[in-house]
Structures are given as structure tokens and as C-alpha cells.
Image (tube, rainbow, N blue to C red; front, top):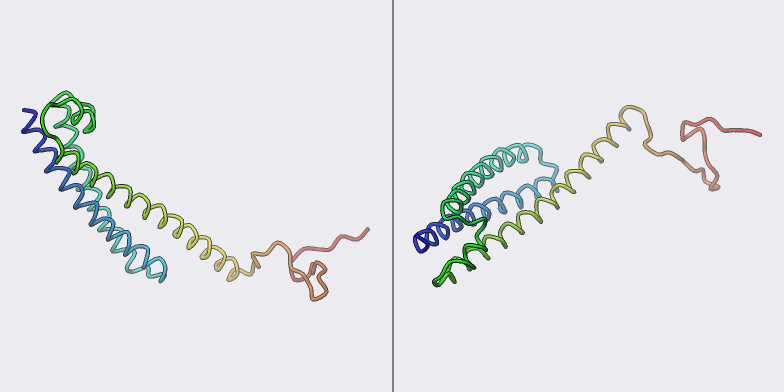
Length: 156
């Protein structure tokens, strides 16, 4: 069973890696759409990302079920505790982990870009609502200009 399981795990990892690489492409498109503030593209990308993550979850559940069937907690344990040449499986696992790390990095970058985009939109909305967004405004001489900042000046 261990040779058959290794083969099945390798096939599942290959499918997961391919899906992660596709997701990486979507994350790159998302990054570019965020840079362009292209909301229409972003909406389409979000839908594609949802489908891709659903596929990844399905493959992962198959992989975990297979590992459970052979009484292993994870792939590294499988590789370590099963006799035979698992070089190909170890290589597939390495490719999978690199693809997952690349997705994670891009997702974090996109998350930060999205946060900055939301802050920018919030500032623009505040300006449109008549709020300056600045706590303090300074006049030409460097002193606090209370009239421009919307705060009343205090006099002693």
C-alpha cells in the first residue's frame, strides 16, 4: 500500500501545485488590478480565486484522507517512516511548499495594498464630506491655523 499511497500522494500534490500556480497567477492579476484601481477586474478575480480555493480545499481533503488511511499525520512523516524510494514524493512536496509560500506572500502583499486602497478611499470620502482629514493645518508662518483645521483656537 505504501508504494501505491506514495504514487497517489504525488499525483495529488501535483494537482495542488498546479492549482496553487494558477492561484498565484490570479494573485498577480489582482495585484495589478489593485495598482490600477480596476474594480471591475477585481470583482472577476475574486470569483476566480474563490473557485480556485474550493478546488484546493477539495484536493487537500483527499490528501488528508489518504494520509489518514495509511495512518500518517502528514506527508513528511509518510516520507520518513515508509521504506522505499520516496525521492519523487519528496520533490513533489518541495514544489508544493514553494508554490504555497509564493501564494501566501502575494496574498499578504495584496492584503496590504487593499488596506491602503481602502484608507485612500476613506480619505477621499472624508474630503467629499467636507472633512479635511488633517488634524492640524499650518499657516505660511508655521503656526497652527485653527480656521483651516476646523478647530477653535484657545486663548489664555
